[in-house]
Length: 93
Image 1 (cartoon, helix red, strand yellow):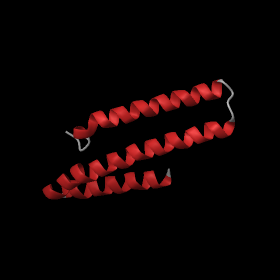
Image 2 (cartoon, rainbow, N blue to C red):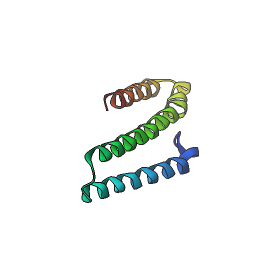
Image 3 (cartoon, rainbow, N blue to C red):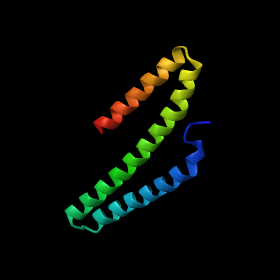
Image 4 (cartoon, rainbow, N blue to C red):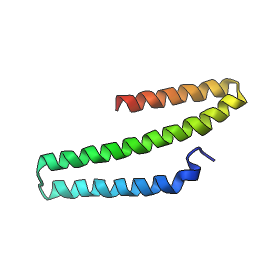
């Protein structure tokens, strides 16, 4: 069981919505729509993905990392390091 398991259906619903937005972007390019309109939609998709990422990160910290810290040992340090690396990737993107 992972930290996001309780909210899995919500994440799947959001990802399906994002998938539809990406298909819409594809259609916009195929139909030669105005570039600013396409960029606006890309921004919306990016924000939606970032929102999912933040939610998953919060779930990871609240469940996986917290559980590892309670257990202690090298696994705790590894989970904290893993979370820090994930945060760094999100900040860079």
